[in-house]
Image (cartoon, rainbow, N blue to C red; front, side, top):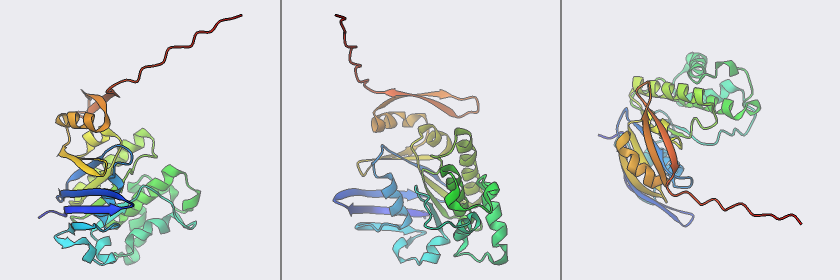
Amino acid sequence: MSLLLLDDALLLRHGQRFGPFGLRIGAGERVALLGPSGAGKSTLLKLMSGELAPTQGRVLLGGQPLAALTPPQRARRRAVLPQSHQVAFGLPVELVVGLGLWASEAGEGGERQVRQALAWARADHLHGRRHDQLSGGEQARVQLARVLAQLADVQGGLLLVDEPLASLDPGLQLELLDTLSTFCRERGHALVAVLHDIPQALNGFDRLVLVRGGQLQADLPAGAAALPALETLFGLRLQLLPAADGGWALSARRASATPVPPALETTNG
């Protein structure tokens, strides 16, 4: 049985049509959602999380309609890291991370779990700081710690993240992508991530779900065979280059270069 099933889920929103989406996500899978800006990736993630209900079709989590689960039941089975990291009040970092434990039975172990989650997110040095006084990258790590704390003591859960690494430096992006993969693998969690970085998707994920214009374009394994579909999706010419660590580096250029206008001639006189 699939962990998450979108059964012809269709959403009509603000005069736009998203879907229908037919997707199955299995326990332990790592799935990257890719597409141009405005393609509907974040909307699809919101359908998966239950933040948006489909106009038609069904979304099932563990074989149960997602809409029928209570908020605590959802919180114990799936965690969501949105693209925006704004918090309404100047909350302490440890309280923001602790929000991920509201549906758990952490009890006196809550502080230990908060500190562990901050360490996983390479944000333990931010303990005691105020969330609204942090940089964008620091806030992103605190919010990542929140969802890690939420699913730390759960098996076979679902972690949904929207551009989780966009505001971080390249080295930290790779480090935290490894952390996310290890965290999910050890617990059997499925990981679904909205990404714009094609090499990250190819190197860190099992499947690529390609979206454009609110429609599913392709669902295929990550790897060299996905290049033609990626080229069509983004209008690029792509070339994979083997990396020393066994992964892939990527060379990209526009499929049709826009001619550069000639320089204007000037005369002195």
